[in-house]
Image (cartoon, rainbow over all chains, first blue to last red):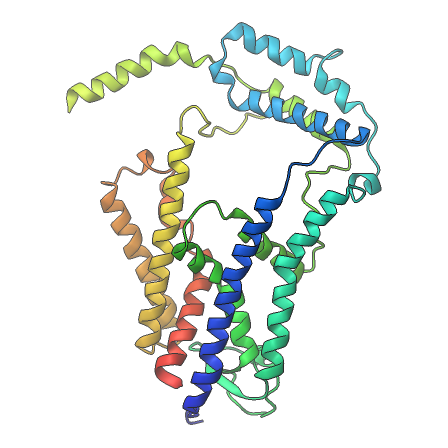
Amino acid sequence: MSDILIDDRIRDWVFLPIIIVMFMIQMFRGLLTKYMDNRKTAQKVTSKAQVAEMIDKNITQQSQRLARLHGLLPDQSFKMKRAYLCDREQGILTKASQKPAKDPMQSMSMMNPVAMADMLKQNLSGIVFMALQYQWVSYFFSGFVIGKVPFPLTQKFRTMLQRGVDVQNLDVRYISSISIYFVLLFGGLQKIQQLMFGDDTDEFVDDTQMQMQMQMMGMPTMPSFGQQNDPGKLFIAERTRLEGVKHTFELNKSSDKALKSLKRFLIQ
Amino acid sequence: MEEPKVELDDLEVNQDRLKQNTIQLKNVRVYGSLNAGVIAGILGMDGWIGIGIYVAIFFIVSTCLAIKMNFKVKEYFKSSYDAYYSGIGTDLLLFLMIWVIFHNLVNIL
């Protein structure tokens, strides 16, 4: 089938506006998240359950730090610290792992209103804009062909890429406007935005896209508060990890390392 | 009990510098895939040839990086796999997006 010629006005009034609008909404969303983050104040730990959670988290952090940085400690102090955590009867990790498992309802921490507000804000800055853009594009720009993808695709993609266009034998390469929306969405306007507007730790921007991808794949998005339904297992894992650490004090190796770097320096 | 996995820990690798290096690597790769998309779109490449352009430019970027590092990967990154090959899938979507946009702008519309 011969190539379809597409009117110039489609490019001026459909293609470029969709790109420009999506890019601007992306930047606006970035600014919005930054603004909301600035206004977030530290939460006070009030209820007793929360205090227990914080204690657990701190214990985990302490054991992980010990496992990571054990080379900085001489033998005696490492053994003391490890015994404090891992001792069979009195170690903190053994005591903590013997606590009963929390039931999942409580550990969702939905009762914490500040955390729920946080989740709502994250959803607002992510999903609502997506749905809004989808509605806008499909309301105004449906029913015609907007462009062509450069690579050959199978017939299975026809329903996704040609929504609204009812011509049966049209080449699957011709796409409707909603598919350019999807291409832009998944393609990552975020990365271009990060390139252009600074690279100061925009980790939370990636989060919404990851969340969205997880939703699309059908998995439910768990609130990522580090909640474990069974904290006992976590502590037992930490304990086995600590007990398996082969401890060497880095200062013992320092004379060897100094010799090596001196040799390398002198040989050059 | 099995042997714990030997990996570079915090004492052997300077974490801040590694993070800076990876950020720069990501930036360079994004530039590379943007350029690849523009080239593939404007020249009107079709199908698999376009993806071949992306892979070619990816390896050109990796080679330039290697020349800049004087081939001593261990001083700048954790492993040569990380520095040269690891990001090829993530930037592919970016390349596809730019390719579709420029192909449409220049050739079709």
